[in-house]
Image (cartoon, rainbow, N blue to C red):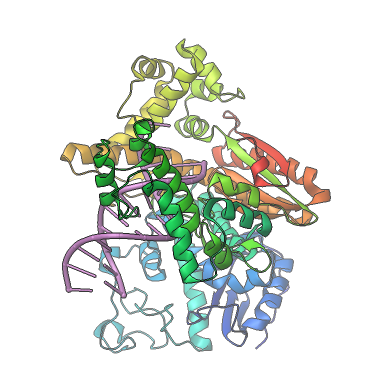
Length: 583
DNA sequence: CGGTGAACGTA
DNA sequence: CGTACGTTCACCGA
């Protein structure tokens, strides 16, 4: 089926929905399957192998805001075909801005956008997923994704929902409706929430590109680093056992009579340590560190842990599994975690040990342009709190210098005080300096206090960008204790979330701008690491890309804060290997 | 076989 | 100084 394109004037911001058959596990592998494209004057159902061409034409003539339920599914064929798209609206990400949390199914997003009770979502009946004869449905068109009571049917959009052209078109219309409602809701909730939904949506599209492109690796360098830490790649299970046993022997040799200890069992390790007089509540690194001199087995154990980490998690198996034949490390990316809203990545992309960084190297004819945001969290605090005095401090290259002067303390003390105020210390003492902060920057401190208090009261907080952060979540790792301890943990979480979350929003706005402004250079963003961007750039374009990264920060920070009062700084450099970075 | 905690890497 | 996430392993209970 072909689409007729109306010749109308390009209208900024008009929505065009793209939806791909929800049954497809991998929309890049099923060229015969269907997608629908619906917008003003457009209503087309096309085979996937014709989708990129149609979307490319519409993009060229109208630059609409491409709207989908989730980029990871609906935009996948477009990313695979490298269709450049300027604007998008990701319903799942917009829902995460509006409501928070991780769950963002079409059913939930739809209900929230339409003001329906999200605690009472219809559930698919266990007996028959496609039983459309329940009383709620009787009044509705049997082909519609909607129930008569206004909810989406529980099964639509799921892999089990069989589509035809009419159903897919209706699914695209539903996306348009849902996105319009979300936008209205966000606009009424916060002045910045619509802009946040835009940059979060762009980040979600970037995530699909990151998964497609991967992080360039020097395979030989990686192999050598892994061999140095974990030994050669075993060619048999017997050899693997032998290498493991040899690694274990480095530790067990220090404790004759206890060679049978399983070093991978923390309980047995604790017993082993106790037998040489090291009595500890746990065998964590920072607990054992003070005992390094007490008995040689402690140092040997800590060394063993490092090698074991490389061998098991970032070893030969990892290299073979996650680094493709094109020497790119790939993993799945998400634009927004379930807590404060950072990006996440799998397969080690976000927690690669620093010693493996020399293996992250630009490919032939390319370099990396790397940039990170300096002192991002205190600068964000200045922006989101509106503290004029603290904002004045951000005009310094080193924010802690003017803070130290204002508090009449040395720089390290000023830094610890600021970090303690933002994150909340439980041990140690920043005492006097903290009081100085309260005097010098009362507006910023009050902002943090309000978030903490809301957390204790279990009330949701909102980031500067308008993202709701619910506080009914179970906290990750609160040690058993009093109710007061849990209150304090929620308070710390909330206080951290409004800073970390706002920083994540600015970072994503920056990343989205970089993506848009460096595309013509042939640049690819290949890593997003919370406050750091790694961009793979054809060598001749390196300096231009570096300039644009810095300019993109000025642009996105000005748009995000709505002012120029707070200064954000990026340290940008051109590298061949990630390890060449200063810090 | 799925969930949990310990441990540790990153920011 | 805290928060968050991803990965692996051993253990537990079904």
